[in-house]
Amino acid sequence: MSVKNPLGEKISQLRQSREMSQEELAKASNNDVELIDKLENGALVPSLTPLFNIARALGVRLGTFLDDAPQNGPVLVKSGKSKHVVRFSGKCSNCKESSLEFNSLAADKQDRHMEPFIIDVHPQKGEHPLSSHEGEEFIYVLEGEIEILYGKETYNLEAGDSIYYDSVVPHDLHAVDEDARIMAVVYTPY
Image 1 (cartoon, rainbow, N blue to C red):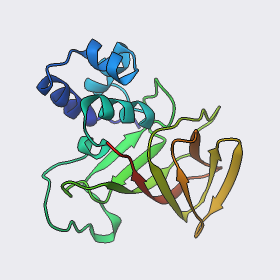
Image 2 (cartoon, rainbow, N blue to C red):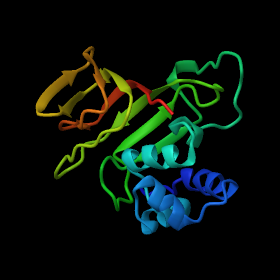
Image 3 (spheres, rainbow, N blue to C red):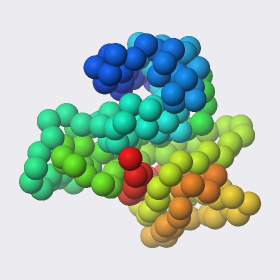
Image 4 (cartoon, rainbow, N blue to C red):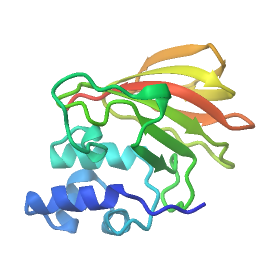
């Protein structure tokens, strides 16, 4: 199912508020202009790595793309059912389908330093290119089986397993054969 990417409008607003052209954002984020244009128009399900670079180029946290009405106090999400669901394509640069559905558990928390998610991970055929970004990630498998490629190592995790790693090391996370569900806490300095 192809769903219009809701992040595009936020990226466009942030870019324009900084008086940047799409070309300037593309250069600053190490992406091409076509990708920025497709993201802003909602025509592309983004991969997470370009979004990290775009957030850094705009001087914001990755979570800023998910924020709605920030709150100073605690943020409560009942039964892990977030009103903030964002779909990502994994590492595919031209995908229209989502392989990762991020349910943000703290989108309304102002000035947060961690990004907690429940992520539905759908199997993706083909290669699994590695990517890296500053920060750390904690993954806990709730359902199914995932494989994590981390540098030259491979880790298979099933329900109840967890892993904590430095995300500066090139890595990839994907479902093995069937859908999986994980809890992830991502920290990225900004």
